[in-house]
Length: 282
Image (cartoon, rainbow, N blue to C red):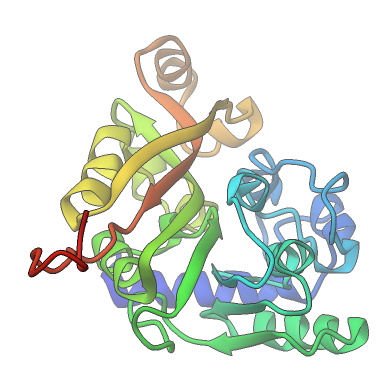
C-alpha cells in the first residue's frame, strides 16, 4: 500500500486530469486522461439538477450524495466546502446563504481551484472564494464557519481523524456539518483495498461505518445523525479488473457492503459561565 504522501500525490494527479474535462466527457471517456474506466468515479453520484444554485459547468459528477440539500444553511451563514472541485456545492450553498453570506471552497488540486475560480468569475459571485490547501490543515481560522459541507472527499484523505479534528476547530460553537462519504460494512477484498485507482475513486479509502461515526463522536461532536444512506454497487466490469470470477462472486454474495452516507453533526456550544447572581442565569 502506498504511503500517505504517495496517496495524496495519486489523488492530486488523478483529479488534475479529471478537472480538464467536463462531466459528459468524463462519463464518456476512459478515466479522464488515463487508461482505466471512469465508471468508478460515476457510480456513486447523485443528481444536483433540481437544487437551487446548481451550475452544470461546475458539476463533474464526482460526488456520492447531496450534502448541501441536508445542510440546513441559513441566510447570512459562512459555509466551507471541503474538496470543492469545480465549485458545484459552493454555488448551491451560495444560493442558500445569499448575498449576505460567505462561501469558501478548499481543494488540494490546483487545476480544480483554477476551474472553480473561473466558474465563480463567470457567475459574478463576489462572496464565493476558493483556496488551495490540504483539508488536514485548512487555510482558515478557528471558529469561522457556521456550516461545513463535503461530498465524497474524506475518503481521499489518508488521515480522516485529522480532517474531523480540523472540522471541529474551524466550526463556530453551535455550528454543524453535513458530509457525504463512502463507508463499509465488512472488509474489502485485497485487490480492491490496495489498488491506487480504486483509492482515488473513493472505494479503497473507505473505512468501516462504525469506525467513521466513532471518529466523529470521539472528536466531541454531538447530535450525530445519518441523514441519508444508500448502497453502492460496483459493476462487474470494474470488479473483474481486480478479482477473478470466484472472488467476484464471493464478494457479491458475502457480507461486505459499500454505502454512501450523509452524516450531520454539531459542535457543542461553549460551556456557559457558572451562575453568579440573579441576572446571569435563570
